[in-house]
Image 1: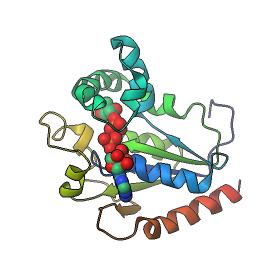
Image 2: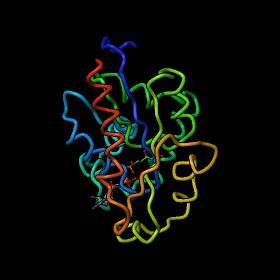
Image 3: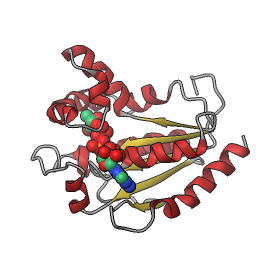
Length: 195
Ligand SMILES: Nc1ncnc2c1ncn2[C@@H]1O[C@H](COP(=O)(O)OP(=O)(O)OP(=O)(O)O)[C@@H](O)[C@H]1O
Ligand SMILES: C[C@@](O)(CCOP(=O)(O)O)CC(=O)O
């Protein structure tokens, strides 16, 4: 890799619908593993940074889970699509360039091209994780269907055609999240220890 650090031992690529809990789950795992072993990478990080700068917006709000970013989501999607069209790995490269930890968690894969980039660069290390929950749970977390967003590739690009290595059910009243995360945490600890 061109970032000068050794290649990662494990890359967990998380995807899931809006408000399924991708950030919540990856933040929880990172707290367990610690910042020396594991980093959370957001493909939307460099996208939001550039978009905020060009449009005079509050980057911290765009990075937060609240309603602010939702006002700009459709426009950010279109803005990002233009860059991805000429270079599908554009945001993957930017998001990973300073990562040095043995375990990477990518919190927001949305398109097959995102997964393909990691599969091709890191075929041995990459595993896909789907975070899912009911629409009812998503609604309780503030989601409501938005045409042009929830029916777009950004939300539906990984609905079909991928056999995920791991599936995490993150419903409010569902199976314990902690228990479901145990095998993933174990895998990450083993990967970090082998570094
Ligand atoms: N298991 C959980 N327990 C309690 N709160 C949760 C849980 N999962 C998610 N949440 C809360 O639901 C909201 C949405 O979660 P989060 O931001 O992680 O979703 P996301 O999939 O990253 O959404 P987006 O695609 O919009 O960024 C957040 O306020 C988060 O704290
Ligand atoms: C514009 C976009 O990156 C927003 C992602 O925001 P978030 O992961 O939901 O916080 C979605 C996309 O790239 O399609």
